[in-house]
Length: 201
Length: 266
Image (tube, rainbow over all chains, first blue to last red; front, top):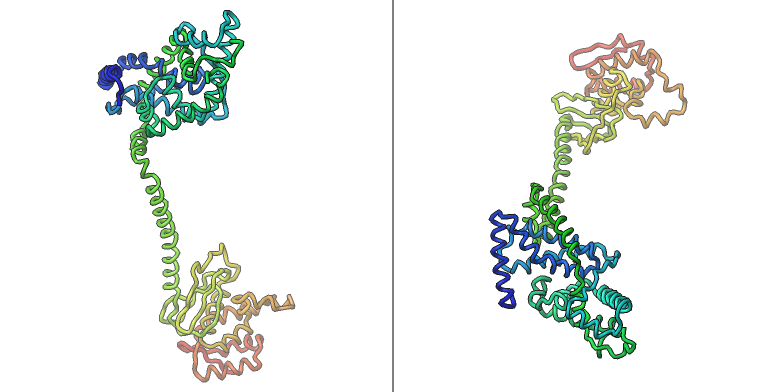
């Protein structure tokens, strides 16, 4: 299901490229890879909190999609299909390595306007103290995310960070929209409790 | 961080959007691109395994895995049990058919004797040490399954085996005569080893040269002596009263063989 006209346009463009790849134009898959690798990587990274694992899983998801692209029949958008592959790979990885949790965090890009506003609202410091605060906040965020179950973490990541709709998340996670809403509500309650010192009541 | 952290100005969604800005740098994507290219080429070159279509088919039939698996296990169990029982039943039938004796015999128990089906009572000794029993009934001989276990070699001479076989046939017809012959010649020990354990004196087990000669003679003579007429019964009684092994040996020349009977004149 495609929620907005922009998404519809994007889905149509993806379908054209997919058809080219299915016809034998292997290089056309690079366009799809470049288009979605950042979002797939971001989703996996926020679920694993480990950049090396996220890179490997992103590559694996893209290779799986490349291998299976002849079976893709366009019943859903390529983006949803690719996300489903990535989510399933990540869930499998997290279940296998449930006891192994190593954080390997990316640096927060403070050039981003939204990020800068949030950091500005939380601290008046500048220079080294500001960097320390940002790092501390980043670690707290990751710790709070890791306290969620895998399914709840997935829902929060897809909805709050990647900006997907409930219906899309339901398709990707193969569950109902109600389940998505319920998981999201529960996950937010836990995160509220964990990040209480940073949140306005 | 603000000194008055009790009054933060952001909500949870803002904090979570902060994670969007955790992005890798450009160098990371170059490295990613190189690794991705290698994996993609490997995926193109790598031949598909021959079982790949089966996996695809199996994934489509995932919902039927449980019933199909249960059915397969049941079928395998049924076939195994059936295959296991058939040879056993067939073997029993084969042995029981081949071992049934046509001669009317009295009820006795002889170890490991197989009696062939012939008009004339004829006995073939398979092995003395066979584990299974042959139960000689009044009409036919019934043999339990797994009748005979082959022994590598017999410790008895052919004469001993022939005597034992003949004794079994005679015992079936005339128990008194058989008992007498067994006592005289010691064949009973050969056929029924359990009686041997009852002998206390070890010297009694030693056979002299006369024993082997007697056995050899009786082996050829006993089938002819089989008779149910009164003369034979009378001679049996006489022999039973006082005939010793030495006397039988001394008067062996008085035996006269006529057709299917043996006449002994004292």
